[in-house]
Amino acid sequence: MSARADLLLELADDELILGWRDSEWTGIAPFLEEDVAFSSIAQNEIGHARALYELAAAELGTTADELAFDRAPDEYRCAPLVELRRLEWARTIARHWLYETADAIRLEALKGCDDIELAGLAAKIDREELYHRMHAEMWVDRLLGSDEGRAKLDEALVELWPYALGVLDDDLRPELVRRVEDRLGRTMPAAEPVRRGDHVAELRELLEEMTSVRRSAPGAEW
Amino acid sequence: MSDTREQEFLEYVQGGGQVETHDWMPEEYRKRLIKFVEMHANSELMGVLPERDWILRAPTLQRKLALTAKIQDEVGHAQLIYRVVEDLGKPRDDCLDDLLSGRSKFHNVFHYPTRTWGDVGVIAWLVDAAAIISQKALLKCSYGPYARIMKRICWEESFHVLHGRDVVLALVNGTDLQRELVQEALDRWWVPLMMFHGTPLPAEDDPMLHWRIKSQANEGARQQFLEGYVPQVRELGLTLPDPKLRRREDGTWEYTEPDWDELMSVVSGHGPASAERLAFRRLSRAEVDWVSRVVLAEAA
Image 1 (cartoon, chains in turn yellow, purple):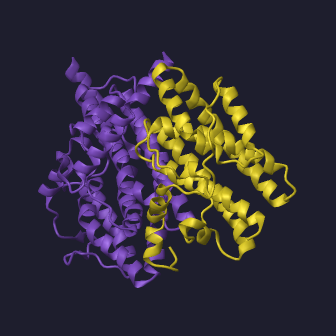
Image 2 (tube, rainbow over the protein chains, first blue to last red; image 1 turned 120 degrees about the vertical axis):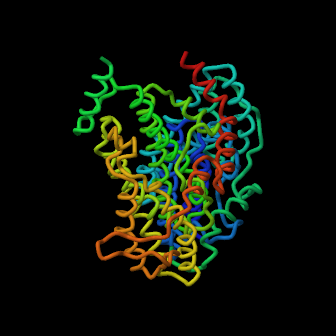
Image 3 (spheres, each protein chain N blue to C red; image 1 turned 30 degrees about the horizontal axis):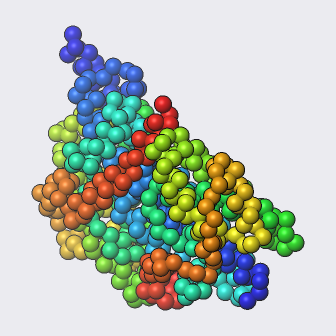
């Protein structure tokens, strides 16, 4: 597989799996307004995944759906940060904010790359991610606004920090550390990144559920 | 004096007049209106639960996007409708407390479990079609704010029906197993669908019609549903599990009378999935309780 297809699958898998995790809040978010917001974010992420899979599929001679649903668990290239099942609000916000911060850095780099198709798609995706970042920043402010919220957010950020470090490669990682520490006004603990390629156990369970209907009639139209 | 005022109000609404939030209204009207609108909002909210699991199992990216958008619409409807209740004097938190403790009700169809992807198609197509019929009749509701939001809700629901029909079409044109998924789901959903519009209460005995909160009697809505959808279902080669179902010469549909006691039992919280759904929502509300505390502290 080309380095380009590899990169496209990394990006697409991150967006697909995070979009899937966001959908776990549908119907049970803390407020109806947040239910609607997380559904929108999930739809955007799945839409981004589809556009990225389509670019990869054209190169690999397959389809976006086959890439999204029909690979073996070990073939997924998502970062463990998005794989974790954390259906708890402070961790959801912490992951949302850490991921969006990392993703912004990655998209900035992609927007300037020589691959015109990918740079154009990155610019398009970034226009929607802007709203996700505003949403994540608003929630970070809200949680930091009270002792209880701050304590819960801090705990979640520390727990997820090694995973967040694994979203970006060695070149871009220092920028993530800088932005996170600047925003929080504190030093994050030194940690070994949980890198892409290592999967957590929750991914297998997620894929099992995600593909259950599709596997019931292989090759069928749905 | 107050009797005259109430009589004038009644004549006004029965004559097609609409009432606004800050207008005077008889207490009985306000109470009945709140109860009715609140049950509608509860239904939109509880209606998310039977479908939400299937977002996670949707078999293609396109279906996943469509289903997420559909369910998001339902949450949006709940939000809009609870606002109407709030303006009438009952805060959203009180509505949620009453829903979770079983003091208020939600629609019968949301008390049943979903078992397969076939349910996703049948619910979006037929449950939403039945709901549109009820909701279109609310466009003429005597309470203006409720009637007005119904325009947007009906418009969105009509997309859900198209989405549901598309899911069903893909399945009936698919493998034997896929076709069986739809037929089996239809068999399970038919009785709840026949109960959907309520008991055949005569128009003159229905207080909701008296105050023109509703503008269509229950049986009229059911007949409209049968007339619109039975032919469509049969056209796809699907069968309906009611041997008595037939259209008479005069255009009315005959059907097996549903067990109305069962309907009452289901909507009062004794349906096959009622307890589980309410427990799930209670648990999730308890788990995110601290978020409200934090947001209120931050806003203060």
